[in-house]
Image 1: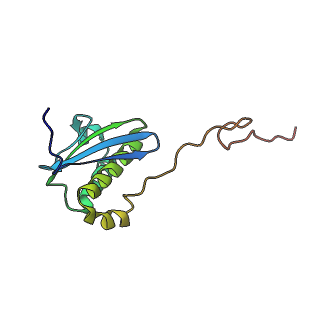
Image 2 (image 1 turned 90 degrees about the vertical axis):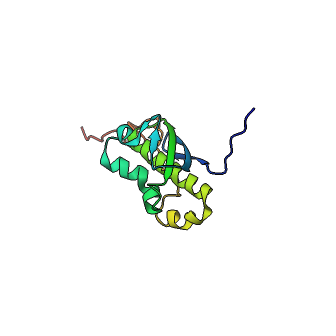
Image 3 (image 1 turned 30 degrees about the vertical axis):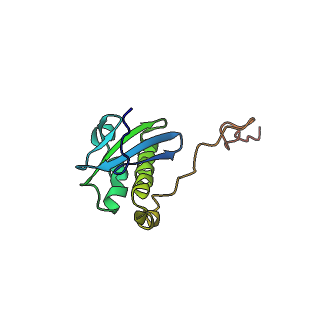
Length: 134
């Protein structure tokens, strides 16, 4: 069995709401592939594309880093945030000197907000029935 060298590669998992992204970073030509497609094709909105690249742009690594992502679950915005979180974590695993810069921008923190469950006797998690006098 051939053992692959992991000297030039870093892996990490990023999460947001119910979305989970497995990220692999290697030295490369700046390509970002999400589920086998280019990230611009997978995330057509410019806002989401910028969100995905924000950790690489913050460190000026967008031209010399190859990123491969497998993302599942959640919606498009949650997936974009999960990919951003995964890229930031894998960059820190690759080089721990990047952590202060990424942490200052808030890219290392996993956003814990998620949908609250519906409670019995209510319409939604907190929405109660409308009161009426008569």
